Structures are given as C-alpha cells and as structure tokens.
Image 1 (tube, rainbow, N blue to C red):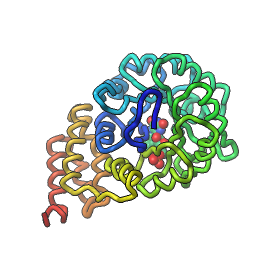
Image 2: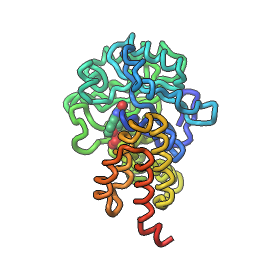
Image 3: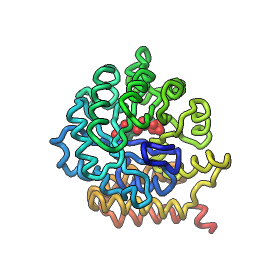
Length: 331
Ligand SMILES: Cc1cc2nc3c(=O)[nH]c(=O)nc-3n(C[C@H](O)[C@H](O)[C@H](O)COP(=O)(O)O)c2cc1C
C-alpha cells in the first residue's frame, strides 16, 4: 500500500491508542511486522505541547524514514481548523512524515471539545478542517474515522468522499459509530461501501484479532490494509502472524517463551528509559498483564508483580515467572 511517496512494507498497521502506542511499543510493533504505527494523539491545543506528556509523545523518538523505517506518523486531535493546521505544521517541524487526523475517538475529553468522532456530525466543519490541514503541510495527511455519529447517521461514505476531494491520502475506518463506543461487534459493510466510493487507500479497523479475521475483512471489504489495536496489546507478534498469513495462507507458530521473555523485557527497558524508572514501572504494569494473561498462574503473578515499585525487581519477577513456564522447563 502507498501513502503519498511512501510504500508500506506490510498491509497490517498498528492503531493509535493513547496510553499504549508510545515509542517503545511502536518500535516493537514495527520490528515485528507492522507496516505503520501512528503516535498516540497529540492535542491541537498549543498550551499542552510543552507538557512532559506531550513531549514524550513526539515522534522524533522514532527513527526517520530515511533510516529505511516506516514513516513517522503523528496523530492530531482537535476541533478547530486553524489550530489543527498549526498542530500539523508544528509536528512536521519536529519530524512527522505523515499527519493523521483523529475523527474516530469517542472519549469524552476529546468530544467535549467537539473533536474526534464528534466532528462527524458536522460535514462542513470536517471539510474545513481537512482543507486547512492538507494546505498547511507538505507531507501526506491521512484521516481516521468511525462510520458515523450513530446508526441513524452513518455518513462514513460522505465523509470519505469529502476526504478524497480534500487531498487526504489514506483513510482508516473503525467499523463502529461514535454512539457504539466499543459495544457490540464492529461491522465492515460500511468500509466496503467506502472502498467502492473512493480511490484513496482504505484501511479497515475494528475487532481484527486473528490472521483469519484479517483475511476475511480484507476479502469482504476490498480494503487495502487492516489496522489492529487492542489485539496487539501484549501481542505485538500479531503483525508478523497476520502479514505472513496474508502473504502465504499459512499460520506462523506462536512465539516461544524465550522470545516472549526477550521481547517483553526489551519493552520494559524501553518504558523505563522513556518514562524514567518510577513512572516506567507503573506504565509497564498493564503491558505485563496483557503479555502474560493467558499463561497458567498469571492471576496470582499479576497480584504479586503489581506490588513492586522498583524497575529491576519488576524485570526480575517477569523473568522468573517466564522461566517457570512448562515449555522452558522441557527445553
Ligand atoms: C486504549 C485505547 C486508546 C485509543 N486511543 C486512540 C487514539 O488516540 N486515537 C484514535 O484515533 N483512536 C484511538 N483508539 C481507537 C483505536 O485506534 C481503534 O480504532 C479501536 O480500538 C478499534 O480497533 P481494535 O478493535 O483493533 O482495537 C483507542 C483505543 C483504545 C482501546
């Protein structure tokens, strides 16, 4: 799939997830086969740009595309064309190689400011935002949407047409409306209708959690790529598994405990380095829970590992837990 001048190596993309897809996780997913990994959203409110939280979200932490890596994507969120245009310019100045506009997020904080998926109700404002951001930056601008505000107002096709005429270079569609939040199952019929209606690359998103599901969604929609969010939490291997299945029709083996240990420990070290040991330990807890949840004894281990506030101890506990897995003992 191409986005402007960039050819992506894999049609399996990481979905932006605030609080999850920070630099260490993005780099891990890219290394394990994701074709693209957008940053956590950055507010268009310039007052927030100097906070520690915003600084940690900057993509200058990712290697640039000139290093042979996937392009750096910064997702921006807001409701006002001029401030979004300014946010786009600011982030391109800091190294963004693609700007993605968030019109998919249903969370209250964003929607109270009439941003994220709340914008889908106002197509005239959508058009003004897209025009302003595309005109502001020399890099490709992409858009992420839901299928509409609610099921009686599923205007995804109309928004997709607006996006194409504004010069948006790829469109990701989460197959739920804003009112659905995360309830029920994502539907991909609207993605299929959007793909038929526009010529720009369309990316299907929502509840894609296995290689077979990815293949089925691509076949049913004709989409150019899939985007995976929650199923990558604790399972960054899903990118190579899906990409391999799409390319060959064959399933890869699940990663060994040895590989899980190596990748998880590397992930934790990356979190300690980005956030500092104290905050890093807290951020790491949810990731550890996700990585280990399906393993025997995970519940008891979780209760124990949540207690520690020390990075070295956290790492040692994780290593010890994985060393006790049956596969390791047999090896
Ligand atoms: C914890 C979390 C944070 C999210 N943050 C963002 C975000 O910052 N920007 C965005 O466009 N979507 C965000 N999303 C939505 C995801 O990108 C994705 O559209 C959604 O989770 C559906 O895909 P999935 O079923 O593969 O998880 C978030 C989702 C989750 C679970």
